[in-house]
Every structure is written in structure tokens, then in C-alpha cells.
Image 1 (cartoon, rainbow, N blue to C red):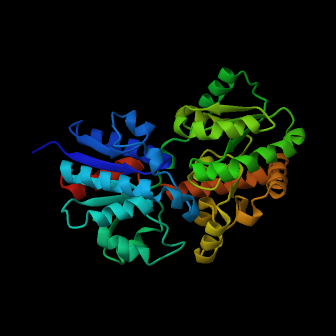
Image 2 (image 1 turned 90 degrees about the vertical axis):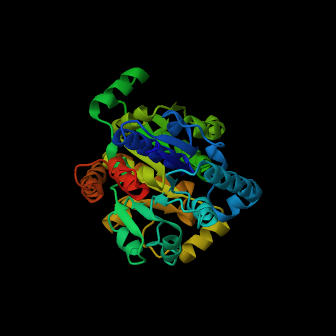
Image 3 (image 1 turned 180 degrees about the vertical axis):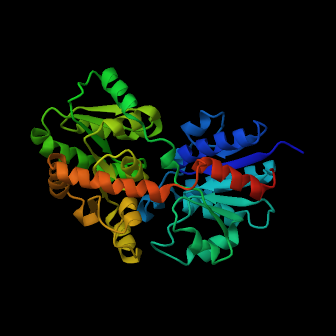
Length: 384
């Protein structure tokens, strides 16, 4: 039997993290006898992966943010499809990035190569008709949230709830103490963790606002230290904004130090997204913000059918993490929310208690999410 080959397409940094975990799990499951190719970032490259082109070419979000990049994206789509035809992999695994991923799957329809998608699209939030369209394109779907599979199974698309990969790594107190020692921070020094996003469009909209918030809040934050965990490929876009912030911030580029920073933090201010789940699992009280191009935001606000935007609040079906979205994403409102949470121990304790519920909702059995994903992928590809 020939050595299995998996073509992985991870469209953005969060997908790169998932892709690296899946690569490790597949390698372990197949005894190291497996090859990988496709599109990924630094995490996947650290696993021996060579990306067809820079992942940053695909890390785009928002209707009007994407428009100027369409010609380049179409070229990358052709390039990716050509590579798949030439390599004839055991399966293609697309991770998140639905705009690019689904176009690729449609382009390769009829190739006979099984397509598997990781991170089920949020059809429960908006455009529910996508479930039927996706069922025509994919052999199998991997869902991170417990309530997602029924939306796709009713369209006869196999769907495996793997559990959310954020539960695989949440840091611990020992790592937090080592980070404090490395940075020369006393145990009593309070840390504010600031996370303005991983996409360029997110950073463009949120980093200036977060900087103004820090300027307004700095007197009441006292001698607090601002930590900004990110990855090298994102840091290059973020750095110019950080230089204009009115407070000094310490950038952390190591993934392990990110989780240590979470554990050490008094409060976090973050872009609404997966990082909110990571903060919740690390028991970090936090608030989230998000802002798009005004017209993109208007379209989403019209189409989205949810009461809450943040994943933690969606899972809990109630507002626990304060949200500052679009028109509410202002310096004044976020500053007020940050200082309120910073000084209110009862509010922080209430969040931490709610976060225990989140962990229970995201766990599935004893296997890690990446191991469950690898099991499903191998089954669909017929290699185990």
C-alpha cells in the first residue's frame, strides 16, 4: 500500500495551529508513514510542511477587505487546484477559510479525491442554506462545537464532533510563574493581556482602538504590564500599531508563552473569536470587541440570527463575556467595560465560574480533538 499523502489547506493562522495538531496526530496514528503538502503557516512548517505559497495570501476577512485581493486569490485558487491534480493525495483537508476552501472543493468536484473540511461553518448563525451546498462538495465534516453535527447530518453529510482543540493546551500556574520570572515581573504585578486579532483586517480596525483604550485607562491600571501574545507572521503587521500605543507592551511570539500569559493575566481584552474560548478555558476574565468595514458589518448584522456574537456567550446561551461589536466598539465603551472588570472581583469570579461550564461543553471523551480528527480523516481516506 503506498504511503498516504494528505493535502492540507489552512487559510489563516488559527487554521495553521489546527493543521499542525492534525499533522502530529496523523503521523502518530500512521506510525510516521505519511506525507503532507498544501498551504499552511509557521506552525505547520515547524512540522516539516512546505507551503505552496504564503498563507497570508489567504488570511482575508470581510467583503470590502477582500475585494482588492480577488485577482491574487483567484490565481492562488488555480495554483492549489493544479497541485492537487498533480499530486493525487489520499484526501484533501481544508481548514476553516470557507470562502477559499469551498471554492476549491467546488473546483475539484468530480476528481474522485475525498474532501474533508475542519471547522464547520456557522450555519446556525447565518446563511443556513450553506449546509446543503457544503454537503454536495465534501465527503466529511469535522465540527468543533457540540451542537453543530445535526445541521449537516440532516443534509446527509457525515459529521464528526471532535471537541474544540483549545482544550488541548491551556497553560498552568508553573508556566505562568516561569514567564513572570523571565520578564522580571513580581508575583503581585497585574497583567493585562491584549489580543487585537490575527487577521490584518482585524488588526487594522482593532489595534488603534485598543491603543486609545489603554491610553484612557492607564492611570487607573496603575503599574499593570501589558502583554501581547501573537505569532511572527502576525507580529509584522501588528508592530507599527504597538509603537503608537501610549503604554509599553511586551510582545510574546512563543505559543507556550501565550498560554502562560493567559494564566498569569488579571484581565484580557481581545478580538472576538476563538481566542475567547482559550481565555475562558484558562480562567481569564475578559471582554471582547470586533469591528469590520462599516458596510461589511451592516451586511452581517442584517444576516446574522444570533443574540450574541462571542463563542463563549453562544455556548452558554447567555451574556457572560461583555461584547463591544461594530457601533459599540468605541474607545469610551470599551474603556468603561475594561475598568469595570479590572476593579470588580465579584464580576471576575462570576466569569470564572461560568467558564467551568464551557470546558464541560467542549470536551468529548478522553481522546484529544486532534486525535479524533485524525481517526475520522483516516477512515474517510481509507488508510486505516
